[in-house]
Image 1 (cartoon, one colour):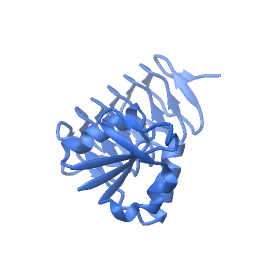
Image 2 (image 1 turned 180 degrees about the horizontal axis):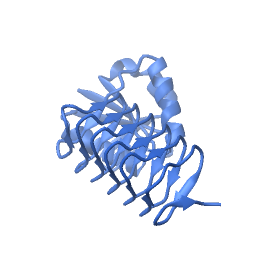
Image 3 (image 1 turned 30 degrees about the vertical axis):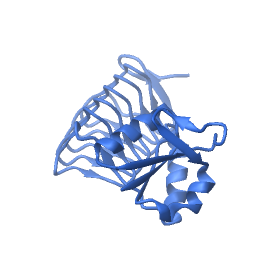
Image 4 (image 1 turned 90 degrees about the horizontal axis):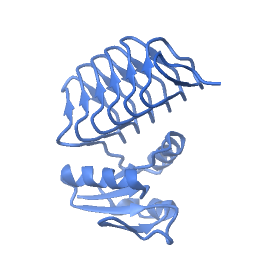
Length: 205
């Protein structure tokens, strides 16, 4: 069981640790800062993204561990088009309903809860201790930060980011490419391409 991780940042370290907890025996990092970046905690950085593309056959799975939603999504699509085996990682300390659906390339960190009938798109990040309640729908390359609480039936559009500790009221719809500030309370729908923050969350100029 050999896993390649694209992106050797701090986020990548947590992805690697999650992978080992899921039983992956060997983890190798690739990052476009290579060769200047050659080590990452306990793991080696062995090449850049081009090197990974050339070595896809050497790995049983690939994960993109890049925090920026747009870049992560682009890299994921490139890897999928190249035939990479994109894997989903769910930390054993996460709680995921058997009635939830999680698409490829998503990582669910320790302490996260995903309840029944939630549907998570590809390449999402469900970060430490977040809660995704029943019937939530998250698009592709969404990042749900640590400690976020999504009540039932929330929709979060593609490429949106919900900041640490934010809460979202039930049935609220958050558009695509939205940024929700840390600690915000979202109580009404948010259109595409805006940044909101505060309690209650309001559009930032």
